[in-house]
Image 1: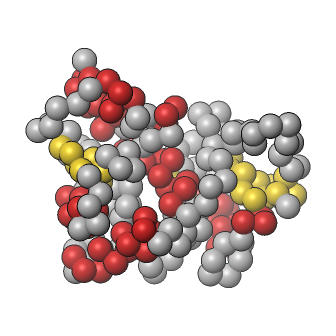
Image 2: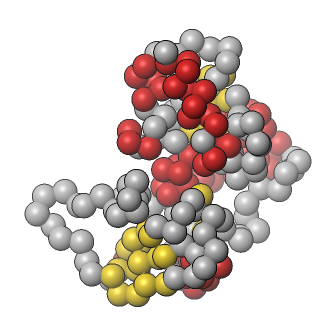
Image 3: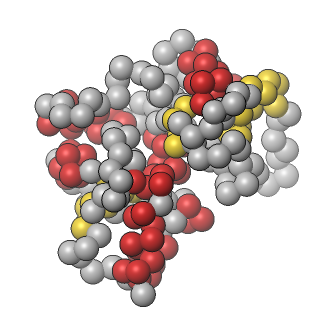
Length: 200
């Protein structure tokens, strides 16, 4: 039962794109980095293992229901949630993304910066299934969006997100974005069709 559900998660469009380097495989990847609950390619698996990030095989390892459930978006796992957190501040067109076939040491350095140093990390709540951000704890009220950007061609990455459909993501302006402020984020939104709400 757990294996069947895992196979379904592996075939989801967002999980067929490596959570670390963004390269895509039409059949989905066979490696999962358990520490971050993400599907990764073989090269990124090796890079993660260099930092003792535990990885398992989809087909060669044993899985229980709790492990599989942790890979779902509802549990905060999966590649979309990973992009929203660990690559929130890395523009989609940044030259810092790994190139397919790059040297293993370059990939290891990218993993170190992204997951150990957390250079592009943001703990801003990632959008749920309907595109609305998770409300803050307590009685706090989310700030009203200051700007709404919209374009016409959903389905690509913007701001490190795998964009499926035309829903929106709320970004906290106070969190800041490295590499030129919000211009890259906003430009990515216009290119991708993702509506990006920027709040103060």
